[in-house]
Amino acid sequence: MKRTILFFIILPFLFSCHSRKGSDTDSGKEVITVSILPQRTFVEKIAGDDFEVNVLIPPGASPAAYTLLPSQLKDIARSEVWFRMGYIGFELSWKEKIEQANKNMQVVDLSRGLDLISTEPAKSGAKSDGRGVDPHLWLSPSLVKQIARRMATVLSELKPERKEAYQANLEQFEEEIDRLDGEIKNMLNDYGGRTFITFHPSLSYYAREYGLVQHSLESGGKEPTPQHLTEVVLLAREEGIDVIYIQSEFDREHARVFAEEIDGRIIEVWPLNPDWAENLLEMTRILAVNFENTPSGDR
View (cartoon, rainbow, N blue to C red):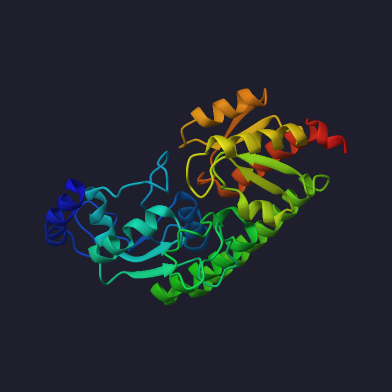
């Protein structure tokens, strides 16, 4: 409650001190706001350094639970566009306050029109708040191609004189994505249908794209119950799995207990790494090595 009150106290002050186009301390470029670090990479692939890119969720913070800082409002107030991923917990909680901080800012939901994964069954007649949709779209190369096209359209509208350059950059980025996709498929060629276990279900779109099966300790965004933990332990033993993957921003305690139960180990991954392509390749290498080194790799 105190943080919310502070938010509204400081808001008028920030509007009086910062114009939409810039201030004495900014770069003078038009500002684009994004939610997560990989989105900044996508914007820069298309537009180079034409824009100042403001990232709302800093490195090491959880996108599910991050709280907007009052100091971030000045960059939101100067932004031309906010590119939302669509269903990140932070976005759902703070969407109205972010839009209120800059009513002239265009808000683009990058998840619109994409083939989304539901994390819980739909209830008849119930109005969804969006929390039942997996938000990790950026870990699917095919979806990133669609996201990049949407970004390129919006960025070209902001700078029509740069439209041809942005289109050329988009085509180059799409070629890079196609090469990345080919490399990942080659590395996983022998492992179709294989199972892996994560703490947080961040690799659902990746698993769907490459024919893998993800199981997670978290269920419905909540900490694992003893019953669910037992079920996943039994699955790991049956499949010969001795690894659990966890994101760096999550508490390792439940993962540690799980690893002890399966006499296994924890491997840390960072899905929010801004070096998007290399990060996907590295995660694929790690998965492939562990598939190769588990008993089920001989089936």
